[in-house]
Length: 382
Ligand SMILES: Cc1ncc(COP(=O)(O)O)c(C=O)c1O
Figure (spheres, rainbow, N blue to C red):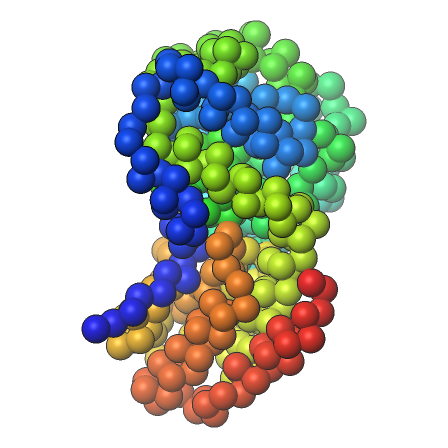
């Protein structure tokens, strides 16, 4: 028997409280039983996003939320800055291209965060730009971009909205939508929200809603104005993913018990312990500005990253993510996001040490685990 551990940056483990809630018989999405459940989840999502705005619930993965965040606010021919520092930054450009929005790309070396001055300069050079698209956490590289600073730059411009992919950021680190002036925030269910894949979430500011009135991009399924209207009745426009929303309510209840500051401190502690462990075992960190959601680890010279993820999965039953695109074989990614605690970090580091030994890397067993324990045992930052 192999006991499996899911330590990938999405999907992430789902707590038994949430699994049990979702195992209840299906209820009808327009019924008096379901409406209070959605009403509660709606309120709690506002708490999570730190916003007074409604957080719209879409039946889609996170990418559906990204598509909605583009098609509901801009029109074909509009220009938008896309910050491309990884796979998901590239996705903004691809979505723009698909819908006739003209991307103005800011290319950022993978592993580094965008310099906000570059955004400022690009907006000065092209004042017609209507939106800046960014990842709060670029999951393909493990980097955290300076979302607050970018939002401040957009805030000064009446006609430019700041659109944030918070798919691996919401519920991981502080990203207060209203006080930072984030105009559109997107997340998905299978990350820090501790749910299976299948829900996308989008919230928009008044500045963004004003653009929605003039946006001419064709849309049908992801019509946020219609979703907003329906959400006022505690319903979704189309058939609700009822089981997932029942799970969402349970997951948000757990999150509220921990509190935002507790959630952020836990992620920070687990991330610091993971980074310390990785470095103590002699491996390098890929991200220059690492996110608390995941740690991107450089694969040592002479070893193929594909063998690392395969050995972790097949020998030690630990699922992590490899590198994507040009990072394939060069990095692997250990998550510590969502339903993660002390011993998930220990499992990830211990399995990494044993894998490295198996693959012939000069890693001394136990060093990484010991370094992590130094941080975790003292509960620093908890
Ligand atoms: C930052 C980021 N953006 C977008 C996505 C895409 O989300 P999905 O696969 O749910 O469509 C992911 C998924 O890993 C992500 O981490």
